[in-house]
Length: 185
Image (cartoon, rainbow, N blue to C red; front, top):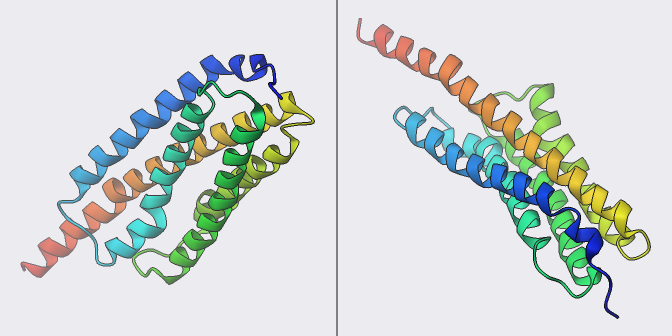
């Protein structure tokens, strides 16, 4: 059965903007990581897996969704299945991130960290997964769900990237410089 894809086409500009933002932010995250790599903290590898990698995953998810919804599909069923699997995978990944946050020793996560690295991503990926079940009977509403999940993941990534950079610039680097001065005395 061929479905009229005009509903997805109406989202074209939205996904061009959101996907472009996600792609640009992935690049900026790599630049920032390169700049702060000069003085890695003890336990930085574990902390990076818990706090840095999820940011790239969320930006990549938004970029992938943007590309996925620009493919000229012959119906919504296949694309909905793909975004549904992506949503389920995102929930599983968020559980892995929670475990990584608990086991890393470089930084003690606070409520805001749990909210932006686990809680909100689980919500976004669940909305994505659940929207796939509504795609056939309620296509416009399902696409709003995908759009909301995409925006939420983009904003989560922006928050987490800013939080990470702020921590390194305002806390970790000054602390490392102070320890270096103290040890030279």
